[in-house]
Length: 316
Ligand SMILES: O=C(O)C(=O)C[C@]1(C(=O)O)C=C[C@@H](O)C=C1
Image 1: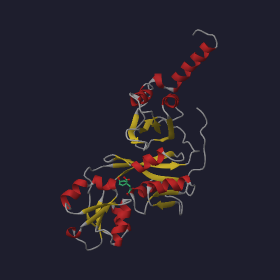
Image 2: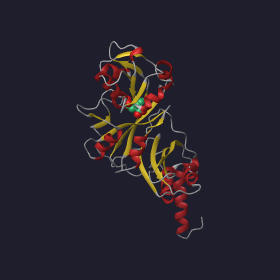
Image 3: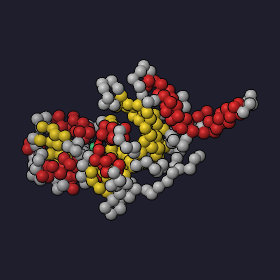
C-alpha cells in the first residue's frame, strides 16, 4: 500500500452557525474543539470559503439527510472552486421543537422560520398545527431561533438546544414527520491530508461527463465491474446550460484500494473531468461488505504481474 500523506489534524473549524445548529452538535460529538477552535459561519459557502482562504483548518458542514436528501450548497461547493477534500464524516439523529419567545401561544404564531431542510422534515406537523402561518426560510435552524429571540419571527423550528441557547420556550416537541431522521455531516479540508484506509471507507467524487447517450451507464459500469458499491449518486446542473449535469458520487472503498484506484483511472479516461473529494473512514456503523476475491488487491496484483510478464516476452 502506498504511504499516506499526513499533515497536522485540524484544530480550527468553521461550522454552519450560529451557535446551536445541528452542525455544531455534530462537530462537538466528535470531541470538544480546542478553545476558540469552533468558528460559526453564516452559511455553508462561507464556511468553505474560510477553509479555502486558510482562515480555518477545516469546514464542518451538512451533506445529506435521510429524509430530505442532499444539501445542495455543500455538494455544489465541493464540485466547483479550489479543490477541497473530505477527511471525516459524522451522523446525527435530528428532531425538532417549536420554539417561541416566552409567553407566546400557538395562536400567536403567524410567522414561522427555519432552515429549508428542517421545514421540509416538519411539513406535515406545520400543516396540521399551523396551517395559516407564513413559513420563512432561514440560514440555519439556530439562526431562525436567534431571529425569533430578536422578534423578527414568532416561532422557529429548531433543535431543543437552540431554544435553550436563545432563551426561547418550547411549545411543542417531536415535530419531525419521519422520526429517526439522520443527517450526515462532513469535515472538509484543503488537500494534503489523506486518512489511512481502515477497511470500511468511503470515497467522494464529482464526475463531469459529456452530454451523450449512455454516459451515466458507462460511468456506473466502471464501479459495478470492479465490485464497488455506491452509497450516494446524484446529478447536479453544471450551470452551463439546461440538460448538462455533473454526477456527485460516494462509493465504498479507499483510493488506496486497488479496485477503487483502477476505477478512478478508468473514470479519468471516460469523463471530461473527475474531481476527487477524498477517501475517509465511514461513520455510519455499517461494516464494509466483504470484497469478493476477484476484486481484492491481490487479484489486481496477480493480473498486473501477468500483464508485465506478457510485455516482457512470456506467454503466461
Ligand atoms: O440548521 C441547522 O441546524 C443545520 O445544521 C443544517 C441542517 C441541514 O442542512 O440539513 C442540518 C440538519 C437538519 O436536517 C436541518 C438543518
